[in-house]
Image: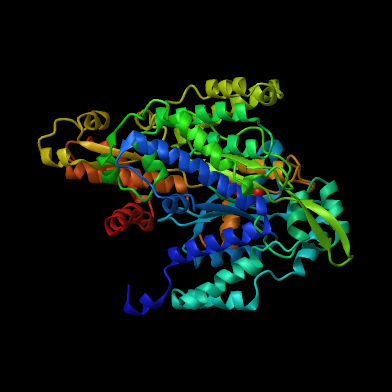
Length: 577
Ligand code: OOG
Ligand code: NI
């Protein structure tokens, strides 16, 4: 880095500021969002209090809880390719780059006329935005022409915003004054909800044709955020709390579910879980905690304390305008720590004025998602996951009423469908179902040169190698499709073009003017890199069979250099903290 760059704002700090401003903006626009954050904080406090009793030396301040759960993902839907390219350039200013290609036009019955990528940092994957681009070629020529014509009339990026982005590109960064101005362009214009729409005829035509998503994009003037998702440390606790506060669960049922949710944390909240939840803690710090047993009655006490917090008058959500909470959580069952679990309060009914005709009406699109992130699956793990999920879907189709009639039975059915998966990180790694990262331990380094095996499992059992799981930092097409379907209250829609066009990653890369990162390649590369480094430091490189060594080298090669900073920088940050 040259001296001149030191005056530039750090892109990751800019990103943190952007998302905290977006969160404030969304809280002003959607009061229920702010309340749900408070409910989540109360639940996360209970989880942390329990973890503190299970790990001697672990404690976490309210401030750190807010910071740790300050991670957000958003979703935007864009109309025109040139707008999409500007979005890519905008996020690049914040160190966020396109990851993975999502073709939502070919996810079976839930298909939608959009293709997408997610912008996030490769090095600090914390905030992310799922960004969809409408494909008007999915429609019959008449609809396509009407949508294209209307979209042509808008300018989402102001001249100032475009100038700031060009400046950042030309100079390799922005001053904080310019950075703040660009963030304000985001919160005051690009991602803002205005409640104003155009062309009610087209809006109705699109909604009636089953293309409500196209109406949500084309008839509005900006890329309004349709949700901003915080993360939670315990999905089941949060969803129970929200359902209690929205008046969908009685207190007794809530207490039962909350005790069970915390009981699950009690059973599974080991050091691996701490590493998954708390990025600010290093492996060494987590390993220094001594396991402890919570006192008798701890969970009951924590549930009572949580209830007392939830009873605060400002958390009386039932009288607020809302459309209820979803009845089941997307993703794996509670016990399987894979990918993501997501849930949401349903899209709110919001007032919209069609400014060209003066017509006042309503629109539903913005909703209140929450998520909990777990380990990233290998392709083998993903295939198994897809199979398990298909079993859940089949069971749901057979008995659609179950989740409402008997929640316990539903949860048990889901757990049965995911039986094939081990429930611990070690078990998942041993079977090659999730990605991990490895490091020699001090004991390993002391024995370097005199170790008699290269078997990873054995080396771990001998305490010579330490491991951690790689957290999943992306999205899932099937979940995303479910979100489109539920928040637009329209299940997928078929193409009305004479023949449905094929949409490819290369097309979206062309539109962006840059390549899309493949997260699997990055995870595979990080894993291989760490293994090669570990074998080397343990003096085992020559003992490794050549085929394995070549495979690891090839996998490591596929990992972009930037991604390797991810763990290097974490240790640096941890040392500084
Ligand atoms: C995109 C939904 C994708 C998720 O969590 O999978 C998403 C949208 O509704 O525009 O945010
Ligand atoms: Ni989402």
